[in-house]
Amino acid sequence: MFVCGRPPGSSPPGQAATPPHPTPLSSPSATSSFCFLSPPYYSTPMPSPTLASPPVSEATCLPFKQTTARQRHLAIGYVMDELATHFPTLDFVTWADAVLRLMPDLWVEGEVVSVEYPALLQLTQYLAGSPELPPLDPPIYSPQAAYLAKRLLTYQDEAIHALADLEANPSAYGPHVLALVTGLAAGNGMAHEVYRATHPGAEHAPNRPDPAPERAAVAGRVAAIQQARQRR
Image (cartoon, rainbow, N blue to C red):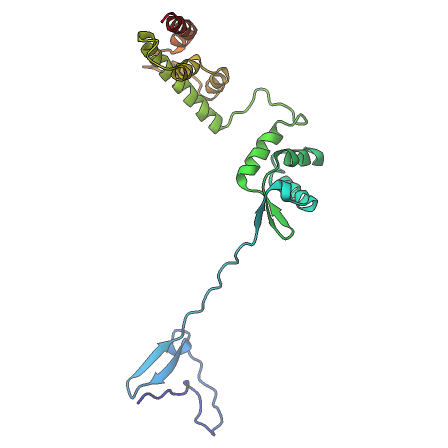
């Protein structure tokens, strides 16, 4: 017969309750209720507490043009707080001008207004060009700029090698292919400047031919290809 017993230390009905002996935390009775199933005894563990779910954000993304003046003011304050260490000397007018010009989407939850990280990146680049900031001379190039410069020079060298295919048969390729190959082969002056600053000595590394002569000859080779296409 299944009989639920009283917790340890309780008294039968009609008798005064006697204080239970202290129960060690390691004892099963500290965390269990007991039921008697005509011996032996079985312990039924108490259910584990249910952890509260994290609150779900109620923030709403609003296009900038649909926001109120108050929300825009809060957004300017948010951007100023996030980027204060980047631009400690800029005045409020400059901050406000950046937000109003770029018009990022705003995440709004009551009186809390924020912008997403990609928008902060755009605002950072925009504010970095503010005339109030002294220009860095020489400039500082980020690792991302160094990577892009290296990629552009790699594309240039590959395009220079592809010129041989155009020279062999100038009319075999359409105008878009011609423009792509010749444009990349011509190179980019800014990419060269950034690459030289961020990769000192790389172009003169051992076992690597100097690419300068081939790059210098690109203009003449491209002109010859264009003339050959016109004759056909």
